[in-house]
Amino acid sequence: MDRFQYTQTEMAIPIKIVLYAPNPGTATSAARQAFAKFRRLNGIFSDYDPGSELRRLCRTSGEGHAVPVSDDLWHVLSHAQALAARSCGAFDVTVGPVVRLWRRARRREQLPSDENLEQARRLVGYRLLHLDPENRTARLLKPGMRLDLGGIAKGYAVDEAMKVLREHGLTRVLIDAGGDIGLGEAPPGKPGWLIGIARLEPDAPPSKYLWLKRTAIATSGDTWQYVQIDGKRYSHIVDPRTGLGLSDHSSVTVVALDCRTADSLASAVSVLGPKAGLKLIERTAGAEAFIVRAPHGKIETYQSSGWKRFSVRAE
Image: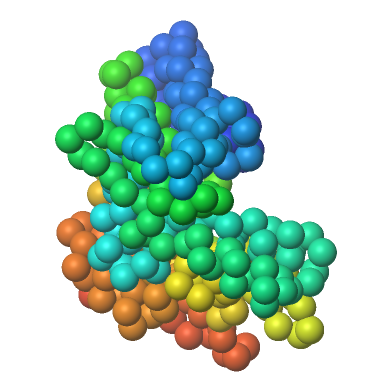
């Protein structure tokens, strides 16, 4: 088995695929179809594409009728709603109206007005999204609602692309979608894939390394995406319950059984904070988390009870 590596931009980010295959033809064909899976799912989940299935669903908000959704969108929405309930709304895909305000705030380096923020908050709340499991339909109760799948869509896409590679008989694989990473069997002669855990500082070397296989890992934080206004740092991650960008300067890394779970839990724990966040992790089978914060400039670290079994070394 030889090592092959491919990188291609999909879902507006560079996607890296590393795999071991018996020949170049098998490797290239499998990677091409995995990238195609990302492209197809982006056409479903994109918040930016007016023609995406997600945006079409949002345009029905407040019309009073349920809308049939595709299997992929159903799986993502049902997973998201379950986590929303478990996290008491810390993870909530109805946060779209508030996210749009903070995107503008980062561009203009100006806080959203209290009036605009309050209007957006009235459209947020996971109970405003009704799912019908029997008919696989979704209904958005208030006009102007907008769903944002930024905390789960990439993770789901990684899982689906991993399935594509397995269908080609390839099991020693890694898919990295901007920090949401799916891992198959270990590379030949290795105990696993060596994954570095990033520090809070941009471009700093990893603080820890993990040997991982047959699992997924995702990191959520404000190392790269934030805005500083009047001397205060605001993350791109928004608390759906308050409508405010997080301000604790944090990074949350979650290892879970699949990437959609790791991705969404990392977002939820970021919002919940260390105490409540680790309680959520401990209640989730197969999940572990490592949290780094610097709320007042001083580094704080927290970890779940099973995290220490992953660590290889600390720098």
